[in-house]
Image 1 (cartoon, rainbow, N blue to C red):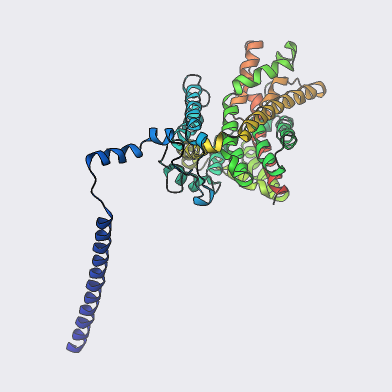
Image 2: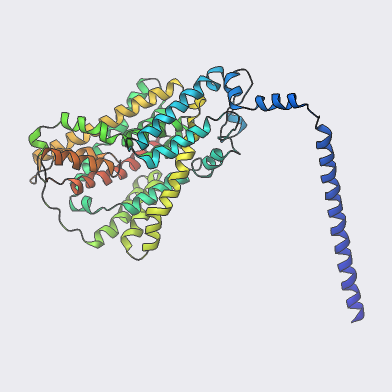
Length: 442
């Protein structure tokens, strides 16, 4: 017994001595490192300290265009380059002015402030000289790599949108799904236009998704096919989503007569709870069998909607609809804003992307209205062509705009629920279109 205690004591002493020796070596190494650091320091006079401070100011970085400052990129040094004279000076000033314009649109005009404010503020941080906020170790770079580079944030947004979506209007009038499909014409039409303008087919595919007015899908596709264009594509997509009340009404009025805009649609049938419960599962199974590339987006969307319609996980559904989607929107906006640095955004391709995006969104709106006009001629029940404009997947902004225009033409004519049918169909349509484009380049 005593021998056993003696052996345990010796073992304990041996472990303690080993630990003390290791700690002493680490302490010596730290002291040596500190000594080296102290040796590298050279005392400076007060004037020299003042000069050192001025060398690190943002004003100096903007004025001195030959200071050798490097760009910042979440991917690291392999994607970074020396900033040119324009990029480090006037380019930054222009981008800051653009950021202030986005602030104005969000705050004064109320154009999608939940989206534009985080994106714009991220753009402001990305253009701060010398801070390298968009680098792999900067705040914006960490956010970007955390959820945009791996496409996680767009999927979480789709999950939240699914939890907020009610498919009852679409199920009550299934033929309105054709309007959501017709509005995707803007995507494939702009694909051809982008190729004509000189973009290669892969970049053109990433740009064309803007026509669906679906921000998360645009980010998802851009990150896969054209990550260098992500900033311009995301800003274009969210900008046109925000400008739905400005862009769509003139197109809607130009393509319809006053009599058509005054058409009053009948009351929708009551949708059974089981229909709403089965619908997301059916959509997901179809996407798995026909277009597996679309399942990340449709799967997240279907899960959010299924949780809502199940009625037994209200806490999860409420989280997805509120705290989760709000938190992710903050990170997504800041991450997208990291791509608004002058060296990435102020290029000729960005202007082309903005123009193509506007034409694509307008074409999608127009095709939805024209399809609704055609359906009205052959339908037993009247269809107001205005609801075709809601076929773009800007949920629920397009449906609200349709309802507002319809009420202006005929007070008391409520089109909101009728417009929600093609609106939610447009969400599915844009995800399917994304899957088609991804399948092409797999």
